[in-house]
Image (cartoon, rainbow, N blue to C red):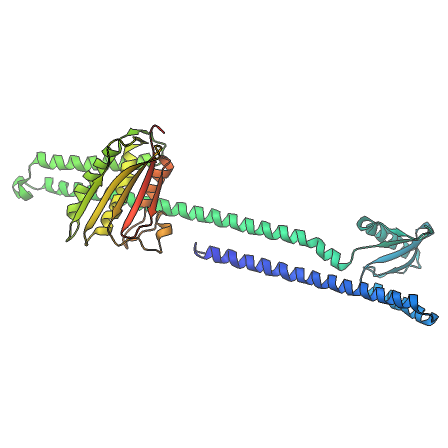
Length: 394
């Protein structure tokens, strides 16, 4: 069952449980109403017997009353002196009260009835009526258990669903992380493979008459990039040390990142606007990871402007002395409403070829490592991401 179908399954289960419970409750209500009707009939027969002057009518009323009591289904046992069974009705078994075995069996059943309800004695104290519960009362006793069972079942299934979703999200995150690592390692590795092919060529056949020192310098740059990638992924699984950093310095690193990538955008250019005022509080952060998180957000803006051009604005402000807000805004087409609520989940991407790990990593770094907050803001044009970071002295 896919993640999207779980809410439908839970809603269906809830409706079924609710319908079953309502049906059961309705049956109990109907039985109670029938019991009220029996009481009304008993009252009517008693009234007729009280006000009738005809002994035959009185006898008939008593006979009718006995039939009504019998039809109520309540087990009754009338016992006299010495626990002798005088009469009985509505027992759950067939028995001959004239025999010794029948008397013993009824007395054993009476002890069960007395656990449900205390016996009722007549004014002389010589006879006692022992009675059990009606079918309506027995049905009502099951309602709390039905409610508890339904609740526990719903909670149990909800727990399983949450556990399944967390496991699925974890697997998705690891898959996306592996793809991202392979993607980032792919570029410098391909470059190193190319330089190796160049080194194998005779000097006079190398493109541009490249010399060994130039090739060695380029190889060194690729190795440095591999080292940086390895260090980033190493830190993401640990609790890195945080230090006091300047926001202006962080943004300068972002500008260097943009400077290397803006020329590669097709056709139209991208204008970069940076607005970082002096005097901003320093933030407590890990430089390697935080730069990585901000680069992912900037890369998202660059991808939005690819092929169309536009503006990317980076600006920062102080919030209440305890926070620093860093916003990255682009003039691209905006985020598809269908994925806005899931934009920071692993595997969610607005690009057909994307793996949806960049923003998920940014959230993990900003919120999990730095105790900050990253969010997509509602704006009328383009896309604006806000990264809030706690001030170092807060």
